Amino acid sequence: MKKTIILFLIIFISTQYINGLNTKKKTATIPYAFYNPTLGYCAGLYLGLEKLWKDEEFKIGFVAADSKSYFGYILCREIYVNKKTTFEPDIVFGHFQDLKTYLSGNPHFPNERSGSNNSSADNFLETKGDDLWLELNLKYLLKKIHQTHYILGVTPFYRKISLSINEYNQSLTNISNGLKFTVLRENKTYKELDPKEGSRIRLSAIFDFGVFSSNNKWQNIEMQLNRYITINKNKETPLILALNFWSSYCLSWNKKGNGHYQRPPYFYGANLGGRFRLRSYLEGRFHDRAAVLYSTELRKIIKFNPFKKWNFLQRHNIDINYLQLTFFAEAGRVSEKIKRDMFISNLKWDIGVGLRFLMNKNTLIRADFGYSKEGSLIQMYIEQAF
Picture 1: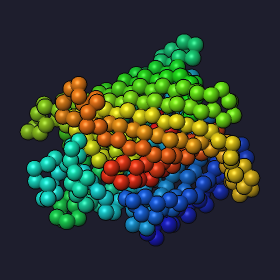
Picture 2: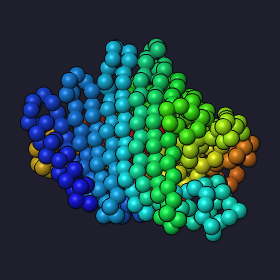
Picture 3: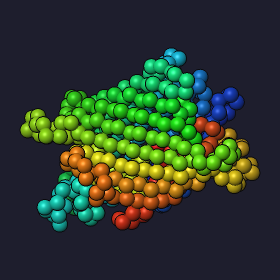
Picture 4: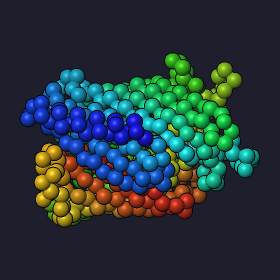
């Protein structure tokens, strides 16, 4: 815990130093605290760096928990290679204690596959371990027709999760790396953090080729559809209905190579739970060959904004442009086969409420509280869930 506090202080002090280097380089630092059932009581620090060289943005976060867990992220945005090409690397890392991991092996559930749609919430392994996740997002703007953008994306990725199973003194290491190819059509405002109108279609194909120390080779496809509708016409406090459909399917599920099925690890492919999909369930709670998810959010920008009067925020280059109250509902499931009833029957659901902060017009911070049959959960991250 001492190391996490020291790192926390280093990040905070460094922001003050960077802010003093050049008044044209804008930094913003936000300390915060929250409680999460997995991590316990947490103290966090968010750092935003803007225009260090040109138009790029760096978003850095670090969280230390009283359970001796910590995690952090470094997200880079708007690094232009040329007028049509952007490079956006993401790094996420963490160390976790007393983590519920939904992998088979719990002796109390000998005939049940952990993480399947009908699996028990108690069918997990108590683990601790480390997580390192790298993505290098390369996007190319193919064409623009009026307000519609057609984008091609290529993302090399690498993720390594090393786990120790507490009860059985066993270790497990999962490594996956490969390429993700994406075709994106957006007719909302390009790169808008909080869209008010328009739609988005995203088609992706993900390949792990089984090289560079990867545990297994596999292929997966995904589709995501989004629609944004402004219900009222008030420009200052709009009411937005946001709709989301997401589906995932593993193409290589029944293929074998080197004696193993070519299936993605539980943290890739068709999985539900965590910060973006079924937010009141733990990360990786459900995983299988196929998955479907329906999400809806009612987003309302509110006039109440006490942060405008905080001199402390102004001194640290923090401008909270507005607060947004959100109500959300989600339903989805995983399945070993794609069949008609997968889309309508035995869906897992959750409902919740959230608060969004738009900061310096380029960073959106969200906090969501969700409730489901398996309990409640608080999720905090940056950017909208969809």
